[in-house]
Length: 84
Image (cartoon, rainbow, N blue to C red; front, side, top):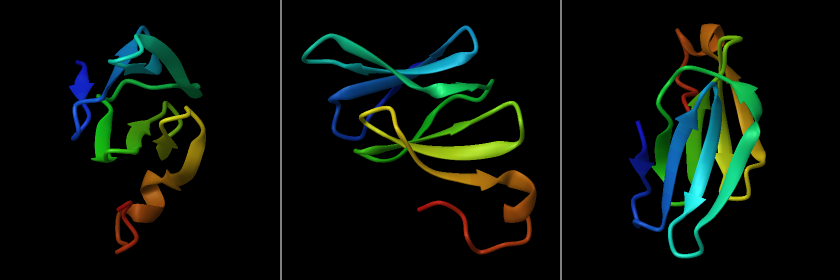
């Protein structure tokens, strides 16, 4: 399911098993890393997307498609260190 950014400038989505970002104004598509996953992307803010991968990680990714940070879901279960 496509998800519109908070400011309406980008759309994050999954096609097949990979994640992508569409710059609405430019019509430019960027692949978000090379991770496969099956979760709907979620926006943390206008510049950061959270995706899940098939290895049990959550990843935060910038508008350039590059990884910002990776979190092991198992490590977050009893933690107060959830992505902001």
